[in-house]
Length: 215
Ligand code: SF4
Image (cartoon, rainbow, N blue to C red; front, side):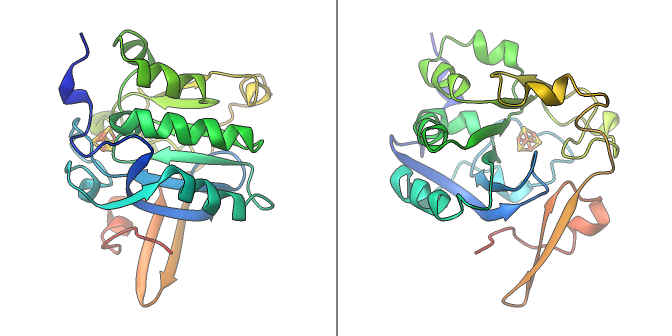
């Protein structure tokens, strides 16, 4: 039996309840990527760097078709799309559909989830399974403040693991050095008088940013 609390009240087929998106960033996974933050996360990890994205409320609803069109516009300068949050598996049905379309374009899909891969695979949830099928690279596990690290480029705590779910990034796993080493990567943007931060900033930097809604 699927636990209904694991699905957002605002989840609807073919519509993603989005919190923010950036058309091209180098701070949310390998290469240049379109990044999509979703609204709503039931986990509530102390120290979460996106507390305004946790409430399960209607934020900006965008159709999968519209998101695919936005991503297609970036196709010449990105190599993939990253889903973050919030909790992507809270809206797994719509994101599975989006991920399928992204891969059909030849782009890769990376997902950050607070759930472990073991839990996702054991949840008996067809939407979870569909999103995993269309995920190339998964970072799993909740953010644990006591295990915070600053030497994994895109990852916040040492318990979080990377899973190469397809061959797309297998070369990174087998490279001479660990693919996610290096100081945390952060990007700052000043857009319309608002400073936004993405990547994995220090708490002091985070306070500079009110929101991460980036045009
Ligand atoms: S799983 Fe991620 S988004 Fe959710 S509370 Fe934990 S750190 Fe924040």
